[in-house]
Length: 239
Ligand SMILES: [Fe+2]
Image (cartoon, rainbow, N blue to C red; front, side, top):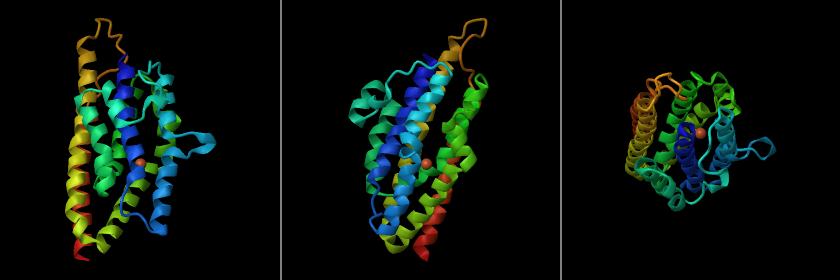
């Protein structure tokens, strides 16, 4: 049950960002559409019809998770929210709005991705050592996919802001809103693990130990991301 709950929250947040990337504005030129497509392919165009969504579910199934939703039940935000608690539902509802109005949400999510993937992989690998070697993690870590996405998001956003500096304010605003909402998702993940820890039977037979720092990692990364984004955007603005 615990692993199923973690899967539902994490997959829902990821689903919201993966679906929302399709709505990114200001990337209409052929060159920018090509760069956007590369990001989409990295999530949804893996070999043999695979996707990051399916990979993540298989990683959880490999450690015995009883998933609470089937893969194709991750659809419209309004429907998905019926299965979620407040913080994750807030993020799932927010993602399509902020992704479709500026590039700020995309930047902050891509800057944070590698940290939260490592946080999740490290936490569960304490009990399931092969978890971090599942393709969802190993492919991304070995090919530095999320580091590339982070650099690409910042570079593309700088290009757009150079041409349209009037977008700076809304870009930074949406980055901040998104970072705060993501922090709520990790706060809830922390709570799930804390609640399970409180119910732990005396022989310690719970599936997951509360790994120090999954939430703290996200919070620290959020602060770092905001700093980098502000610096990058302001630099673009004065160029
Ligand atoms: Fe990414």
